[in-house]
Image 1 (cartoon, rainbow, N blue to C red):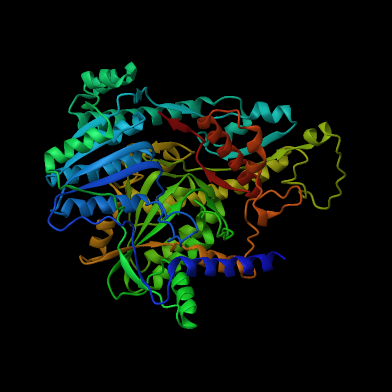
Image 2 (cartoon, rainbow, N blue to C red):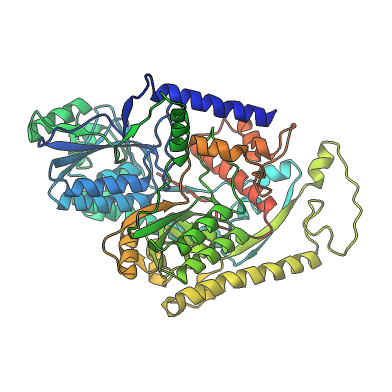
Length: 630
């Protein structure tokens, strides 16, 4: 029945696409990211509407009737800004900011690109309709002029770092956590083991926040042309009306969006064109449905999706290690976005492909991950090492490249990070939850029959015995030793301290990591790409993202194929639904968490996802759960 429904969906998809593409036989339809065209020779103002989450990895090309076009990726935005810089018709840039969901490290990279646009002689205008937050100001400060609407909220009240501790909840439901770590600062399991942070965890959080706060002040101070001490005064003031913010120099103008448009027309002429395209190349597509081959042609074009054929040109491959690092592969779903998680199987396949592709001259690993499975991290590391044996591999760290994210980063010739990247966390954790008291509370008892001295080693029956704890600790020490050996082999004499003084789960910002020799250079993704090209000795090249995104029909066909179930998928079978329905522990818990505020809800959801991962994997490389918000 399920397979029949999938076939029906496939047939319906083709019919809907045909109807969308071809209202009449033999029609030619132009597709692109925008219908707006700037008339030749007229001045242009390029508009960037930055709102909501902006993903690192490019998405697949969506097909008609199956949702809106894919949101631009972070790389799309940066590349469009680069094109703007060199376009003589573009006289200015407008940034429309609305609850931008970017990490401070990504903002750093955008700020460098904005600086380059301004250095090319173009004015940059930032406008906020609803609220100007700390993060918004860090980005907007790079503009020539900042304006907000008359009723906007100006709230730049500092950095607040919170971690949820759920030991009290586990105690109430009769669950006893029992976790072992390698390193005094490997505090990731503390959210389950304790009701508050250990002294080491508290110390580490404070050195992270000190570094981030210092970087933030410098970013705003540089953009607004004031001293960091002045920015600190603004932050301590916290909440301002738009007019107060203008008088203090936080912003430049209080105006509606139409007033900004009038100002731009005054500056650049009434014939100025506003270009809102987010940077996709336009192409013509001819579909002839007057013959039986027309639908087949449409089918083939749809299946091609975003796939790019060999061009014979020099390529720099960009491989995204995005999200939690998990073993195996995700379940394909044509009705939901591709997962923002780094599965080992597709990443290994992509890296193996790049290793053997003669057109690919170098590879950049863009790592934005808090870590995850130790096994999956080693698989990705090993695949990157095989690429590195044939061509340069350069790492560009995003907002996070910690624990397993740092593990895979060591398989490289050079590591770039932003000053505010969160990285390192060199350590390992593992353990289990003892649930017998919980089952007793609901009236369920268990009878176990075992053979073998350690048959119940990872059973949820009870916490580890002393002998079991020694056994698990010894095994984890071996995994930890492999991690440290990778770091020492990769970093060598660059390390400023013995490895045991750098590891132990200690987390650093990118700036701190550079000073300690854990990364090589403060720089952006573009800096890493340029360095990779230099190492490969190519000057004329294109970039291409891997794993290649898939469109709706590709996912639908893949979902229909046999053998697509992944035994490593993290899902909790309940109420008759198995892994194929994706009913996870997080999904089951959400109805009970709706009363929490949004920021803390996200932290609790992350903690529950981590609980699932810890239950699935015996050895985990994850950084502590710290929610940093402004």
